[in-house]
Amino acid sequence: MGYPTVAAALSALRAKPGVRIQDQQGWIIVTDTQSGTPTLWSFTPPGNPAHPSVVKRSLVAQKDGSTGIEMNILCEADKSIVRCVGPAVSGAE
Image (cartoon, rainbow, N blue to C red; front, side, top):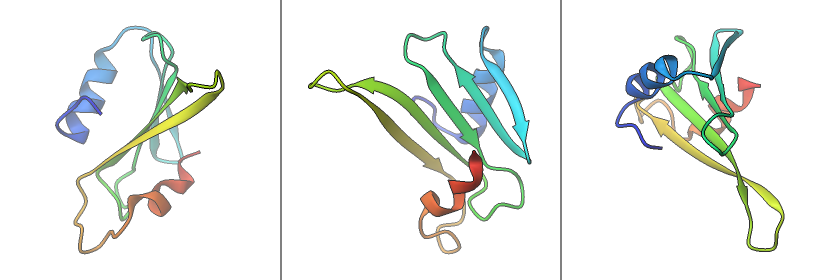
């Protein structure tokens, strides 16, 4: 993921030139096309059971020449409440 915490990731992305930051129904969506690999960051809104969490999706070249999506999740939510962040973040887009 590249950041130790969700807050650190959001702070660094807010300071990064060239990224697009949007609010989509409380989700903070950051689109970064400046780092060579198109990347979409989805930060959970307060009140979401997975909050605070972030999902990072990046386009990656596969060995066969196709393009795939690499997904990384950083979840700081109470693990006794959130078993799996995946379903909780499905509404991010």
